[in-house]
Length: 466
Ligand SMILES: Cc1cc2nc3c(=O)[nH]c(=O)nc-3n(C[C@H](O)[C@H](O)[C@H](O)COP(=O)(O)OP(=O)(O)OC[C@H]3O[C@@H](n4cnc5c(N)ncnc54)[C@H](O)[C@@H]3O)c2cc1C
Image (cartoon, rainbow, N blue to C red):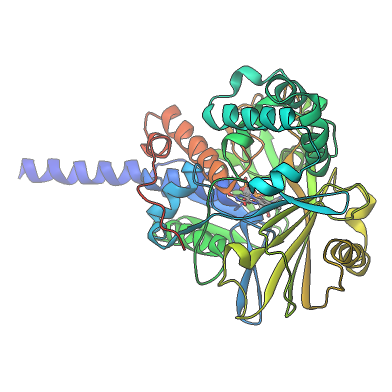
């Protein structure tokens, strides 16, 4: 009898322990928020709520539908070194479906197109042979170096000049940095550029999942994991204000009038949004400045040649920074026979006038770019213009990730692609940063998570082509 009572007490105690897990509010339901919630739920925390402004989870990796087909908000490909992404694709059972393709990346310069991975084009490229050899040396050095912390204080210009030389910078990297950040190489972080080249986006095979848009497969799969773990999700409502007592956030006020009590908060919204929620100046976050993206996805029945996946538009007179032929990577995207293009512009900030132009004005600029490059008029039969106001921080020289544990509020943890420097801002690094925030909370409450180590040690077993 005594033993039975004891067992009952133990069961009650276990139940009480589970019931007593802190109430965690995750601000933002992009991939970093989803991964943070998953890390906690996986450890048995059962009072985790995600608050997401959009109609579904996914954020920048979200999807839209046209005529029964799904498309990303802007081009998305799977990187072979993006361990956080590969780990989660594996966990949701989608990794065996991933197919890998060598893509063609073109560089449009002074009215001509160059594929720098093609030996003939490489020789044609307007740069001396000695500089071409230095360019190859730069790329090989970057491919082989995975830890870029020693370049944090140095610029992209120094990096390129050291291993490539000033002519390589002027011909290739100055235009690319202008396209990406609208800044010269001197102001961009050398650590960021080195890490970016290490990921071999332009030269290694890129992945996709046949049958549609892979970011939808990812977001749907992680949403299922959250569902199975009973994570609460509040969609279509924004966090409006954070109620603070002493040095803790105790309440999250939503714009639908509801207030959620919080023991712990994970902020995965952009730092500029987080500061607005605090309604207090936070000089420690002021250095994080977001760039914006305007992205037009469109479909046409026209054949576009040459075939390419990625084209950098390096001429100063173009409206767009890049064009992507989405079905050159994923032949199954959209309806059979369609050519699906993403024409996009990196904009320095969402306050830039271009960001606020009408769809018609933006598309007129993109059609002019298309005509200049391909010599005929683009005739899309549908177009969707997406404005992504806070895409990624400018990774300037000396950029520092804001701390994982908020510097002022003792119960707030931070995740998101403003914390992934010097690595690239990708789906996988967002997922990994969410996992890190969840793991930090567990560690601070006497628990552990095996997810960070599992992601860190994750290796691809095979890369089926297709
Ligand atoms: C143009 C472009 C191309 C890309 N290409 C690739 C690629 O090829 N491969 C790759 O791996 N990655 C790519 N990425 C990067 C990847 O999509 C992002 O790094 C990742 O999705 C970021 O996730 P996150 O959760 O950190 O941020 P977000 O996705 O920005 O999540 C933040 C969430 O917070 C929500 N939110 C904001 N304010 C509030 C509020 N007040 N209350 C509640 N919710 C709020 C937002 O709606 C959003 O869902 C690309 C991104 C872009 C924009």
